[in-house]
Image 1 (cartoon, rainbow, N blue to C red):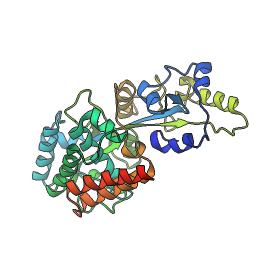
Image 2 (cartoon, rainbow, N blue to C red):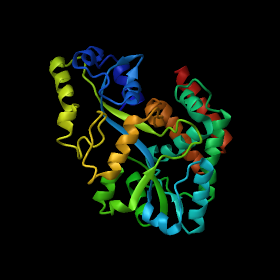
Image 3 (cartoon, one colour):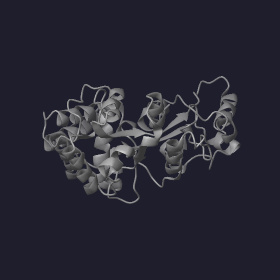
Length: 328
C-alpha cells in the first residue's frame, strides 16, 4: 500500500495491525530512511514497514541542453527564465499528461511548495491553514502564467501521463516531472541513458524539499499468521535479499544500503543517495488528502488550467470543498 491518506482508511477502520512490537523485535528502527518512517506513521504509531521510497524531480536531456547552452536552475526565477529560453527556441518547457489529474498535480504541488514555503505547505496539507490563502492564489496564478506563456505542451488535460513522454523524447519539451523510476522508462523506450539527467526543482527554500512518497507492507488484523507475515517482511526488506534482486524489484527500496549496479543504473544510484539522505520532503497531495478532498483538488486544478475559474475563484472553491468535507 502507498503511504499517507491512501493507507489511512485501513488504519481508521481498524483493519491493519500496529507493527510497533515487530519494529522492536526485528530491529527495524534505523533500517530505513527516517523521513519514510515518519511519513507512514499515524498518530505516532507504525502500521506499516517501508518497502519503496520514491522521489520526483525534473528530468532533462543534458546533451540537448549542452547544445543550447542551458544550465540547471538554482532559483525559481532561473527556472522561469529557462522556460522562457526554451520557448524562444521553439520548445515547450514541460510536458504533462492531465488525464486522471495526478500528473498535473505534481506541477501544482511544486508551485505550492515555492509560493507557500515548507511550513505553510504542510499546514495546507493538514488542513491547518485555509486554502483561500494568498499563496494558493499565487500558485494557481503561476500555473495559468506557465500555460499562457506557452511553456506547457498545450491541450494536455486529456493526455495520458504515459504519453507525456513523447514530446520530451522528441525534443519538443525540455522537462518532465517524474520519479526515480524514470531511468527504467528511458531504457524501456530505447533512449540513451547517457543523454539524460535530473535535478530537484528549485523552490527558494531551505532545505530544498522535493515531492516524495513511500510504499509499505501492512498486515491485516485478521491475518491467520501475523508472526510469519512479519518474518517475511523482515526477510524481504533485508539488504542481503534486496541486493540480490536490485532491478526492478528493489531499485527503489526504502532500505538503507541497497543500490543497483551504479554502472548500469547511474541515475537510479544518484536518486538513491538523494532520497535516503533527505532531511525532509513533501508528499504528493493525493497522499495528503482523502479521496473526497482530492476530487475537489482535481476539480479546481483542471478548472484553473481550462480558465473556467480565476485563481481567486479556484482558491475560494477549494476552501469551500474543505469546509463541506469537514461538515460531513
